Length: 214
Image 1 (cartoon, rainbow, N blue to C red):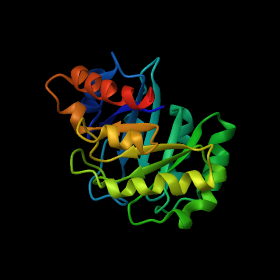
Image 2: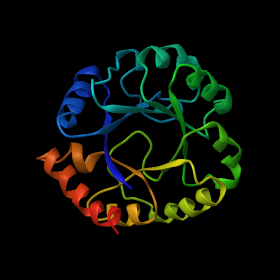
Image 3: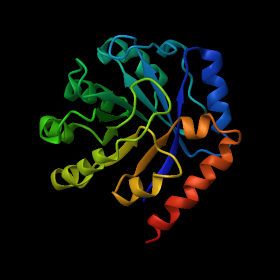
Image 4: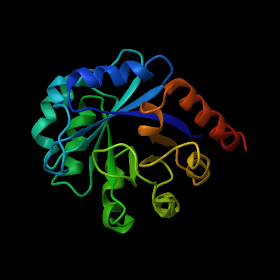
C-alpha cells in the first residue's frame, strides 16, 4: 500500500513552522528535509531549530555529509525515522545501531547514480530505502522515473524493507510511482506550492487509492 507524505524544506524556523502547519491538519506522515551546505549546495534551517508536530509520524531526511556529528540532536528530537545518504561520509550501520537503541528507525537515501549493488550491504541495518530522483535540497524539478527500476532490484534482495520516493512527484506521475511498488511517495512542491495544499494532497491520495485497491 502506498501513501502520500508531504515534505517540508525551509531555510529558517519561521518558514519551517508555516510549512508544517500547512499540512498538519491532514497529513498522516511528513518528511522534514535538512541540508548542511556541504553535501548539498544550499543550507536549510539548522537541526537545533527543528520541531516535530504532535500526532504526526515524522521522518528526518538528513542531507548531511557527516550525520554522526548531529547524533545527539537527532536523539533529542526523536523523529520516527532518520534517513541519511549512502553517498555521505556516514558509517550507516554504526549510526543505525545508535538510533535503534533510542527507538528511532533508520533509512538510507540513494542518488540516481548509485547502484543497488553498491549499497545492498546496508539493507540489513535499515528499515527504509529512499530512492532520490529530484534535485538535492530544493522543491520542484522533474521526476527521473527510470529510477523506479531499482524497486524490483531492492525487492529481490530484501522484501521486508520499506521503499520511499523523493523527487518531482505530482498528480501526473504518482500512480506510476505507486504501481512500481513505492510505499511512501514524498511530495514537496506539488503540495507546498499549491494554492490549496489539502486539495492537492487529496487528489494524489485518490489517484493512488486505485492502485492500493487493485
